[in-house]
Length: 484
Ligand code: GLN
Image (cartoon, rainbow, N blue to C red; front, side, top):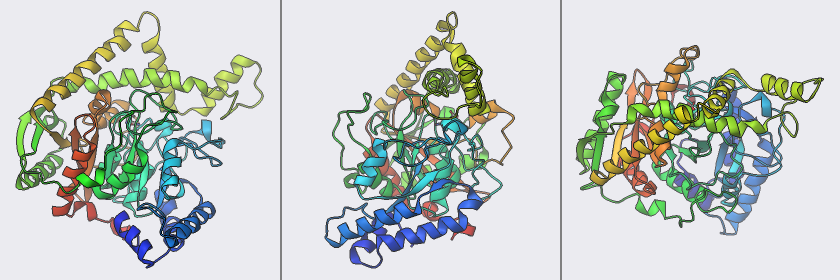
């Protein structure tokens, strides 16, 4: 059962081949068997999942279920879940039980999905390897000596190892796409504002966006459909109506104009990854697409601009964790200042502290113009690059990451080289446009991701292009040997 797609599972549930309770039990069993090896779950909520599954079975029996009713899933531990620990991968929130559900959580529950628990992640979503988590590193199911990518590493590992059919993720600078690439799954970061950020613990509010992490584009379309849509609780939520994503999946790609940014294929890109990406692009040619080289001249500025904007926003967002209202509080504080500084000093990990310090520095009087304002100007240039490119082409393609999954511990002492693993993903967040990563081959038995980038609101077209590719290739069907 664990290798079936949502569509197949849904058909099985409707036909009575198995119940949601049986399905949920079988995934819970897989989590029990493999969850510890991968360290991908922070919380498993088996009892509540089985209760939800029985409710779903009741709806299905009455013919009232939708396509997602009774399908198991799990949430990145950045989404608030009422009555459950929501840790955000941090000691700071290790004792935090959320009093409410994030909109993403309530929408997927309303669609009948059965949550099996919460997934490990980099602390406050800061990281590219899932090694900054308070709960320890997550392992890549394709090679347990390697990282799964980050920050949605628990989500990617769990989906790749078939411990859950789909998971939620968030992407501030690549955190859905890069782990999807490293773990050989499909990940979609929607246009900024498409999915509500209410109840999603904030890292960098102008960049954060939630999306589905699945095994196929077809599944991603179904889950995005339920996640997306206006939410009065999020002032940056778009008031656009949600299109029928699944309806666009099968459109022909004849005449689709694809741009390959030359900046994505320069120095720094692994040769074998480049070959896999080129072979994938060749497949698109066969599907009728026209391919041309384009340029995104300011792309080399995306990482430096991001590492000013994101830390600046995080330093403000994380100021709420002060040991007073909720979260970690130090023992026996001597006075208020001691309470603040020790609670934060003991509650946050090293990477989070580094970002808060960079952000506070960049926003401080005298440096604001030189750093923050400059970074915002660069952000505008990057958006303009994409805007110009989309006057010429319909989609942009390239690698999701410069390499396949790297070894655990390989980059932990070198933050700069860690930051550069997001060099192809970060520009997309700065511009606010949608992008996907889909499996496109293997290098030395480790998955390679192809990145598809679209103009604002082109999720339908992205899913269509991804789906057509998945109909003529098998890369997305690969299962890591130990998890078959
Ligand atoms: N790896 C990037 C960072 O460390 C992006 C993280 C993310 O998208 N949440 O900030």
